[in-house]
Image 1 (cartoon, rainbow, N blue to C red):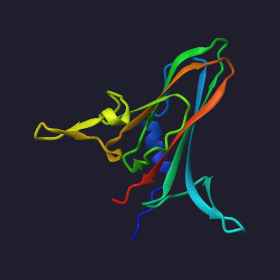
Image 2 (image 1 turned 60 degrees about the vertical axis):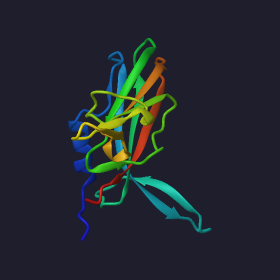
Image 3 (image 1 turned 90 degrees about the vertical axis):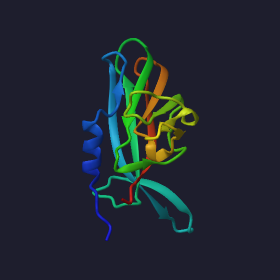
Image 4 (image 1 turned 90 degrees about the horizontal axis):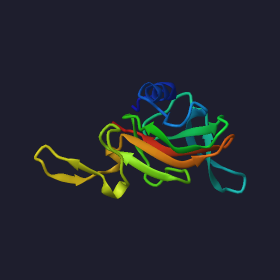
Length: 163
């Protein structure tokens, strides 16, 4: 029997753990959305992806995390960092991070960030191994400049863990 996990629980965990921290001026506004991504088949038999508000999800479901940003300030905001936690109940889906800026990841609870190919995990015996997506704890976007009144969004997909 599959256990149901409410998206509200996942979203609350996400928010409680520090979702969407931005380092820009007080003019930056962030909004987070958590949706279930489902496959729909149209009348012609074409398979398409659609995002819907989810009441609950089960292991194996795909969850989309999106952060919309807007610079409400009067001046441009430089080097804006948006950091999102990847909740432990889900696993990041490789290649799903979207946003036209530098994207880095953390495997140590958000203490250090780097490109995927540079991440590693130190084992109990002192040896290290390349990190896998199951090790990711955070994802970070660096926006070089967000002009006054500019809006945009960043997002990533995850799959609800089976265990």
